[in-house]
Structure formats: structure tokens, C-alpha cells
Length: 110
Image 1 (tube, helix red, strand yellow):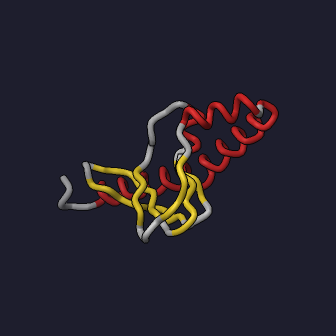
Image 2 (tube, rainbow, N blue to C red):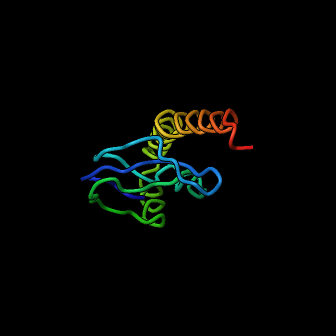
Image 3 (cartoon, one colour):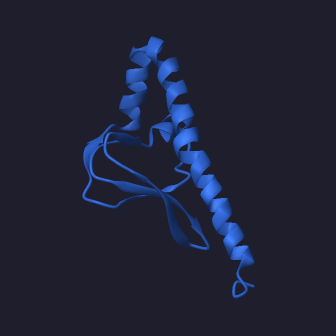
């Protein structure tokens, strides 16, 4: 999990091995928290746009923290899931669907 303190990064996806970055995020954000909680691999691509600085927290340590503070685990997990679905996943899937429709409309993409 990465805590971005300085800089900007893009979040995107691939279509036919071509990257498309649909969302720009700034400092004071977190990358990978949802994936640690759900024990899944990253669904999207992440790439620095500007010089980026931050801190990292390994999955093992995040689990340790949650085990130590069980009362906060539920609340944080709920907030992380909602943030991921509304700020990252839904907008990117909408953008990906739009991009795929644009490809389908192209005459040179047959």
C-alpha cells in the first residue's frame, strides 16, 4: 500500500495491450488499500505523472494493525471499499466502456 504525499499519478486500464489513463489523482491519496483488504491483484494500472513521493506499508503490517485495532477495522474497511468503488472503479469502468464503444464505431478497427 502506498501513501502518496507529493505529486500526481494516473489510473488506467489496458485495451489490446495499449494503456489508457482515465483518472488523475493528486497527493494525499492511497494506492492499493482496497487490494490488500480484498486480497486481490490490482485491477487497474497506476503510473506517476509528476515526481511522486510517499510512504509504503506492507500487507503483513497492515494486517497486524487491523488485528491490533479490531474496533477500527470494520469502519476503515467499509470506507475503503466505498471510496474504491465510487472514486476509482466505477469511473474507470465507465471510461473503459466508452473507449471500447469508440473502437467499435471506428471503420478502420474491423
